[in-house]
Length: 191
Length: 186
Image 1 (tube, rainbow over the protein chains, first blue to last red):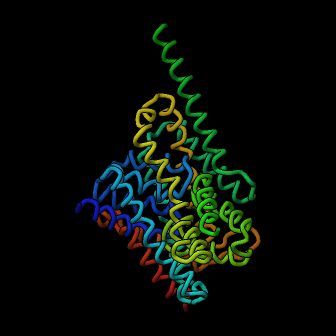
Image 2 (image 1 turned 90 degrees about the vertical axis):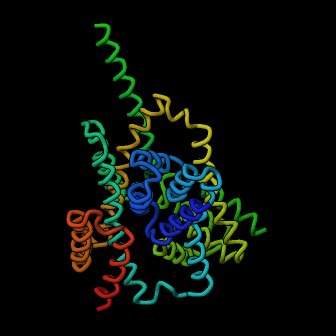
């Protein structure tokens, strides 16, 4: 029971402090669930991120459901997902009902401008951490650079290409490289 | 009936929003405008609110639309609908497809996806920083934000070298909010 409460409070905290969407949340989940509580390993976190990115829905929900299920099966998954949703649910509900001109309050707007800087830093931090833990082979490194550059170009020239296209292509590349690799191995063994 | 519309509309969003919130924003816009739930100006305001309040952006939008259109029950239905597909898919993967994840071809595909996802996240972070600082060919860059970004990044990454665990992400967010109020307020 205390484990479920811990799950709920941890994900409620993560939900309360995640600004700017799921990518910024990766840093927070890393900090709490991997480094502090050791609920999941860094490799698992990487897997969840990849799965979250390849499946529909908010990344935060995917991550919370994964960690929750691992710690406490179905009740855990429900509690963690509820935890990550509840703070923003309450905040948005209040804003939509009470504070009509919320973003026009000067100090609120200024605080958000500051927070946006932090969000950028946290997202880069999440990517750098994954990059450091990744096996340093030429092929993956090239793919990291290519996809990053492609995304930046897509955004700068506002081309209407979704990141899904990049992801499908790289999954395909992964399989092709694997098939070529295993054929090469067989050839070596025969030779 | 509004509740049924909210349920179906946001289930659709939850099911088809691949690639996180930024892919979902146009999708939600379409659903909201198609149902005539809000006008263009209201949608823009709702997106701004959802981006600048804590929590997953998609969930924020669902709660907002649901609450405006159907009060507490509306908010609950829309939020549950947007969350449900992601929740069920992860459960499905963990319960039924665990073995599939060990398949060598699936592993190879995931191996290809990993560097791509890292690249996408990296570029999202970099783009966000560039946009914050208003760096573009046409406009004048926002020097104050560039300065603040450098200082905050130096403090965040530098603290990891000095103290063992460094400043936590939550700490960084609180400090940045404070810095924003002070620096932009003057």
